[in-house]
Image 1 (cartoon, rainbow, N blue to C red):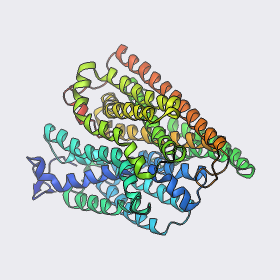
Image 2 (image 1 turned 30 degrees about the vertical axis):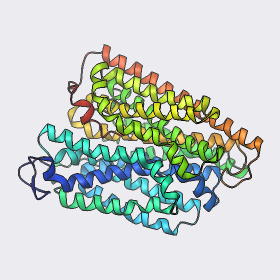
Image 3 (image 1 turned 90 degrees about the horizontal axis):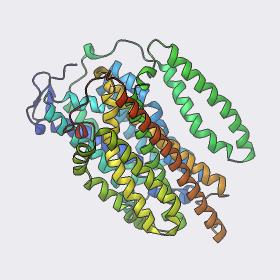
Image 4 (image 1 turned 135 degrees about the horizontal axis):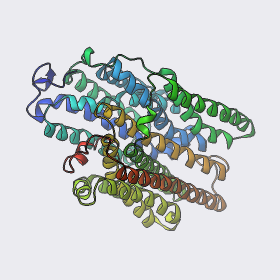
Length: 507
């Protein structure tokens, strides 16, 4: 579709592009609402896990999947729906996903078991995967002028960042006056706002601009099954004896799906992921940095909730106050991203910010048992690092790709972050379930059990930090390869526009 559009009282139609940002306010409101729900749903339920566990009688593994199921579905299906959107229309797929979001969110009022809530979270992740891939492309479609595009993307990405940052804090305060179901019912008005804004503010896809080649559905399903198996199997293996026997069957099935996925990528005429793109140094380095950040951020968010509310017994509202320093750093640090990247360069900014995120998780794992001050240090380090790495990692990936593959690049960045986040929650939950007997939400606590639980948090925190550190090293080595190799990609964007332009890649 031609990017040229026109605006009549905020509504776009075929013709000239809008001359001002305010002329496309309807579309911008809708796209901002999409980013808001995607990032809000990533973080809002963590602070409610103890409350949910008590009310639904959840097991430790069940609580883990209340938090992780959304990220697994979101990350596992994003590439598939990105490919579908390129062929049937980004606007159409996004609107369908928003309808699904509203319907699924309404079903929360009928949830009575942990399994039902996990199913709701999976379907919410499906809705997020349907809306994410086309969101940046639709934002670019609004304007022809590069300056207006930058400003539009800044507005939209800020909404998502606010959702990610304030989710735990808002969730804690809501729980003080309302049931936990309200946290998910809030998606309904957000979905309605997004639907109206995109339906009325964004022109329909032009059939001439859609890709004619078929979607590699088989490859996408094999990839999703492999990811789900990798994340689910450890939680089954540490369960009761009957569950463990099923776990070994899951191991075999996961290995088979993984092998089939690799074969499919190498042999399919139009694979869901082009392995040649992933082998480019800038692409692989950016994805490694983003995965390290996603793993550390999700791991810390999950573990801090367990530390504050289970170990120290803080009520949800106080736990919400305890996460405020990270909110402040995230929101206040936006003005510093551009100058920082200009001063140290894109490559150095990527590994420094990723290393800060990993260091924050390591500080939590090693020292959180000694008091809140160390939790505070961890939150600040992670907040500062993720504010930068979300920009520069995405910029590295998109710089390393051909100009006609940037939509795939954006989906890859989000997928790496979401899958790493899902893996972090799965790993942390598995470690806690293996070390602490019984449900952490309903069992009686003793001094010995508290100490064992604190040990589990330490092992989980340091273990995740070690994995994230390896990813940072991989990213640094791949980035160094890119610096030494002859340039085979398009020139990098200017340092003055890169940070803001790429900021919608998840912070």
